[in-house]
Length: 189
Image (cartoon, rainbow, N blue to C red; front, side, top):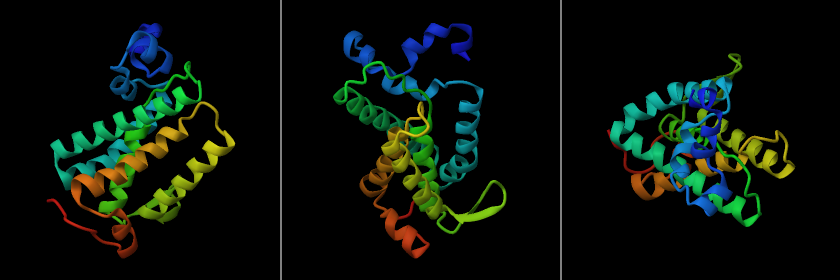
């Protein structure tokens, strides 16, 4: 919304490696998640958050969910920043909650491995298979540079940091949950 009123606000809220380095805009590692590139961008992120996030929040509680959401998003932004920095991509503009949303999708698949998600409202796919499918698509898209302007690396980082969060903080092995169609490790109510 702010971007429509004051378009230059993106320079302060999106994560731009050159500005993080030159002007020390470190807050961008958080604010990029709340800055979007248009109505459809925020719409699809918020739909993902609504459909998958509500279930995950009910399972782990609001405080744990907030920590999970923010931490995976910040870490996905930091990893993206490091890669952009190392490759000399200083003028990339990273925005959107997709890193966190992909982490939430991952969490949904761990907690609800038998849930059926209907692709285009027609094709049922189990949640873990959807995560694996998205991972393959994102890796392929990152390598082939298809869909320019999409932060495939940040999406993958969301999955990766969600995996680590489950292992380190929650003591749940997501692979066990995916394989055995049930909880892997300690469950929280």
